[in-house]
Image 1 (cartoon, rainbow, N blue to C red):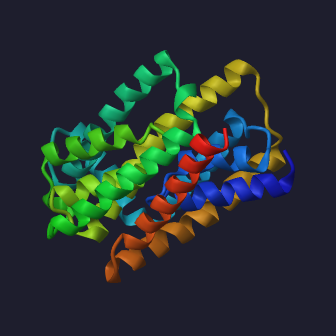
Image 2: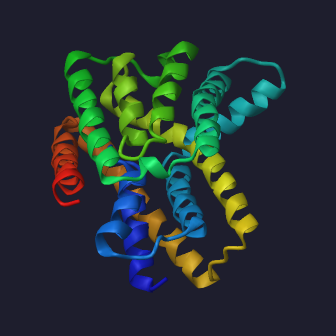
Length: 267
């Protein structure tokens, strides 16, 4: 794959993973719109590793908390850190179950302009409505395990391209009473086990299929997606401290309408 395509796709992944506009949808759309060859499984693993690194660096204090919580759970102690660790694990289960179901029935039918267009609009509208209707005051340390489970159920829907993992988890976070910043924070922390699980499965498929990516290309993809992801996290949290989700919802609706036009009037 040419270097300019790797850089562009890595930037797209790094940014859209953390903005509520769907990374999976954009990674499907970019090759389609530019007429590029599909980036392949190994490239998907590389860009996800880059964004995972961005989460680890930005939220290093929370990562340390999670590690301490894991250790406390092994010792049979339920601390605040252990509770957060368990909540993230619980919130990952629905996506794992739904992911296994989709892997059995296939996902090719979900990679169309029409599907991504409708999901962009529908879930963008849901984010707008819930963000306006619910006045969140809670932090993630005030969440219940039931709250974490329902955010996980919402995250499972993001396996449908165009939904947006960060967007739908922030939507549910707002619905259970989290502040905008705390909803985003939990969404970003929840992506740690999700990305690890997805990257592991994709890497297995890539090895099984014999797909190989040159180390220079792999390093470039990881590095660029890491920088783009770090920028996106910083931007998103700063934005939500002083504003709302409207700008992203406008983008989603505009993108969705454009894709529906391509699906229904240019086919």
